[in-house]
Image 1: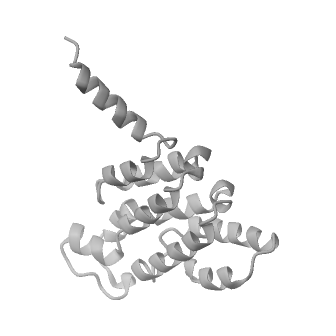
Image 2: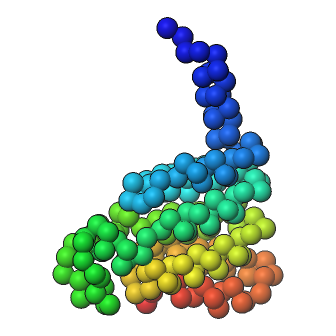
Image 3: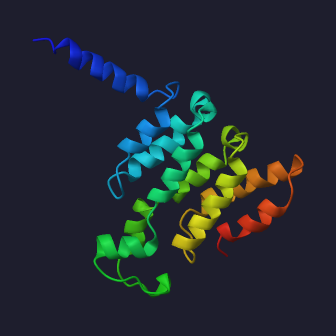
Length: 181
């Protein structure tokens, strides 16, 4: 049995809104993102495929989508409280649970940092603002952990490339905190 015509039209409209070429693409995408921990894989997928698409990069809502992905990222303390059921120690090195391994699967900074390290993202007009925002969010939520360190190093290489192209050093001075020692 075929679905009714109005149902087909509704499904077609929903599919069009999910395409980066649709004016409401970003709003639609943000609305269907699931909170963590459920949405972690989707966040990573978006960062490695959808948001790298040239049509998506050119969309006026691309910056809002990336900001939403940063907003979704849990802090170490959020993960301990929500998943582990305990308050996180001040120093993650003092944690005797297996939350480090669990958090490794939950945090989504690496996906966003890798996205921002790509040539397509670095050519976006909002790139410098997003790099600063990513640095601020990572510092606030995971200040003492090395989660996302390889991705942060990629991002710093991209920042370095921008500097060689003539950008000011202010961005690097704000991003050096991204990579823990």
